[in-house]
Image (cartoon, rainbow, N blue to C red):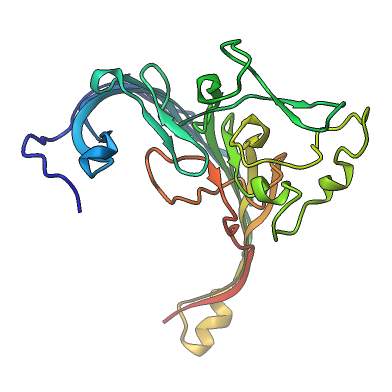
Amino acid sequence: TQLPNPDLKWETTLQTGFGLDVAMFSSRIALTADLYYNRTKDLLLARPLPPSTGFTSIYDNIGELENKGFELALNTENLVKAFKWNTSIVFAINRNKVTKLYEGQPIADQGRGGNWVIEGEPIGIFYNYRCLGVDPTTGDLVYDDINHDGVINSEDWTKIGDPNPDFTYGITNTFSYKNFDLSLFLQGVSGNDIFNGSFLYLESASGDDNQTKEMIDRWKNPGDITNQPRVGDMYKSSRFIENGSYMRIKNVTLGYNFPKELIGKIKMKSARIYLTGENLYTFTTYKGMDPEVNYYGNDNIILGTDFFTYPQSRIVMVGLNIGF
């Protein structure tokens, strides 16, 4: 099923980092910061082969990659008396760049979103046609003629998006008063792009798929000014690249611990009832069902692509913890 390669060897990563740990005011404020630079050699990737070989690729040590970034964790005890309030903040920035590939040859057009691996660029960038809008005269989509030869073809492909975020973060606040406790966890991502492959079909004005309400505003007559063409096309273009930034109310938990003098009468050491909600609400401009998706799972090249991907469920649970 695949070509053997007896010359394969382990990837090698050189890691350099600096860390800082600070605690102040009797540890009521604790800060951890890490700065790192990692360089990987002999990166294992599927090197493209001419189809005439009977295979399209072979795994080889063909790449070099650098990762550099910053991670921050801040924990604070804001109130410590009868009413307690603690906050935990995590923040991370990572920049990756492919610095070397086999003979400079890119790994091209992976997945439905057209992810590429190109020297000098982050892993998995979107590389395809740049859509300029709808021609008001004809209702057809117009694409950027990058090389100015009067023909729209693969020679006009260009970088149209990056699925790698600018930064990620999480904020947890916990409150307690007497026997009650409340936890609120917010999680977010900023600066990443998503290829909305679902809309390739849902705004095509053809086929058997139901269409989005935006198709009501499609081009109908010469002179119409709109972003929706008379009939869509199946080109993977910047038309389907969207901002994937979001902030999500990831978890909220409200609990009550029964008094020990009450539960001790029935020989219990502890009893706690709680109500938990997960994925309660997402703040985003993304038009798809869920910005925290990738139809291809955890693949390290095919990133940031949504193709009728089922969204994360909103979950509400009631529980009771009892200790004897």
